[in-house]
Image (tube, rainbow, N blue to C red):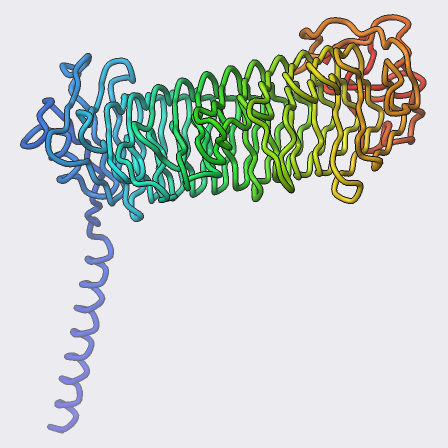
Length: 529
């Protein structure tokens, strides 16, 4: 009897314990969970350090916080007097507008240094007067994940004078991480002595530049630093440039440097953009600088240009608009009014051809499709285009109104038979000063091509009756085919890519619209794109 009572008591104890644990579990399950909310920290003064300063806000911020600025700081400059601002966490900094708030390095130090663990967004402010000596990134150095919105990066510098060191670059910004730049201006940055390039931006990582302007930047490449440049942008990583303008930048080359607007030795895509008024200048007698007024695409460069314009660029040496030693594809684009001065030609084996007002394809691979080369000038050879020991494929291209002071006003082809391969298909070359086409290499293939003065043994010769270069619809300017043009309906559908590989013209008009495809970049149609 006692044993039964004991068992009953034990069972009750177990039931009580179970119920107690169940209640505790329910209570814990229903208890509110404390979630740490991201904080907003307000900067209240322009001091370099201490309470209310930007530096203190960055130091105090937890990962995910946002830093803002009191409205009383509008029109003010925060001047750094100690060290750069280093960020190694997730952080957002929202300014008062690029014209209303400036963060200055006081011409003595870099402004922002974003470490590899940094995930940083900076908006609506100006980064100015940053400077480093013999280092990367005068204004900003990014090794993490960085987004720049509605900002201005201006008047930053790289100083020092260590020759032969390839790492220095990016007076405005140096990027080795992932960087997105939107609605921003990168301007008036320069190297004070010499650098590897990238007066505005030097990219060794991944760069996305959208709706932005890169202008008035300057870079010098000296002595053994050669093979670099890009006063606006220098790229050795992966870069995408969309709906942006690269203008009025200047590369001063003492070695193999160049690329007034852009230097590319990585992967780059340019679309719906303008590269205009840039300059590649060779300062020293006998120097190898001065290539690619607008763009220098170097040997490892893979560059694609779409729906874009290269205009009014100047090279002291070769490639007024563009110098190519790598792989280059140009589609639905216009190369116009560029100048190659052709100074100081280089002698010896494998020399680079001298000239190329629009494009100098020097040992590279160049594909041109649905594009226009117009109004370019060379003070030596190849007003529109030179192909020198490279591979050229031009299809549905219009080459018009180009000039050379010697020969090859339209196209100049030179080099050995085995090294220089040229194919011109469904293309127009006309209105040149200094002959439309000069071929000093026997390896050239022409199919369905009209050359006005009958040079290079074309399929068709005579006046193509082209209209002026102007906006005829689409993203870029073209030469319209006027009534009665010999170029109209020359290629049957299915032949030479007509209506198959190529279904639109440079403007986006359907090919063919009538009995066959028209030659050149323009397809006659009553419908505008």
